[in-house]
Image (tube, rainbow, N blue to C red; front, side, top):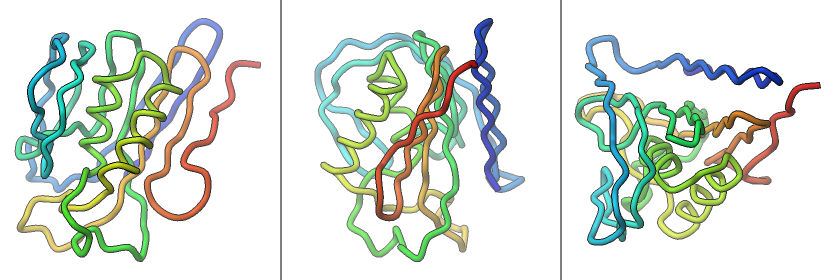
Length: 172
């Protein structure tokens, strides 16, 4: 099971993330420098216009384009979470998977609120669908993300009805 922890205090922010990826699945930690807009960006299953990117560091399974978790140059951290649902992403047309949304949120946003807006807009436009586990894996699921800034953060849900995001309270 994935778990994320965000602690926002006046003297700093802590973001922690565990992963439920398969034990034998290699993950790499990568630095991605800033990138100018232009051309086409290939996510796991879709091609999107490339709007450029903020610099970031993130971790991903070697076979996926998106990120399990990461932090960008604006100190926005986002982690990918499992969300149990009756929806089957394999029956949906190709779309974005949770890890695509994590990477795109980090690449395109300078604040947690902007990351939520980016991810919600991308979900509304392209939908969520595809296999977030290696093609040989038997289980699939939807994903959710949690943008955490150096100030109060937000949580974004990608499955089910209701508001797509909720605030995370800041320091008292």
